[in-house]
Image (cartoon, rainbow, N blue to C red; front, side, top):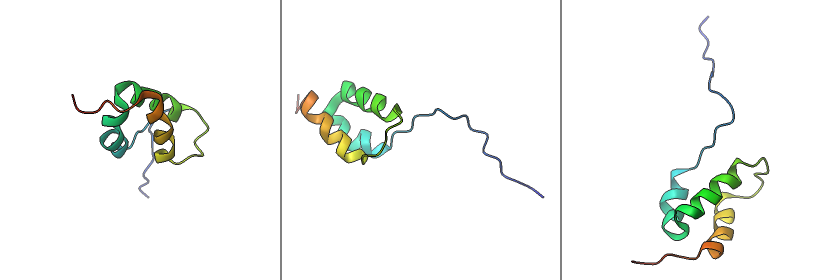
Length: 65
């Protein structure tokens, strides 16, 4: 019998494209870096959008250049 075995390593960090596309312009590269570090932590009981909303005031919105 054929079996599909998932041989991916653990300890990967995945960030949904929507986070980068939707919030990236608002929080910038440093904001995305902080978000990535936060997502890496084991406590992931908040929805992604709530976490990003918490980060925006820390970095501000870069606005149009």
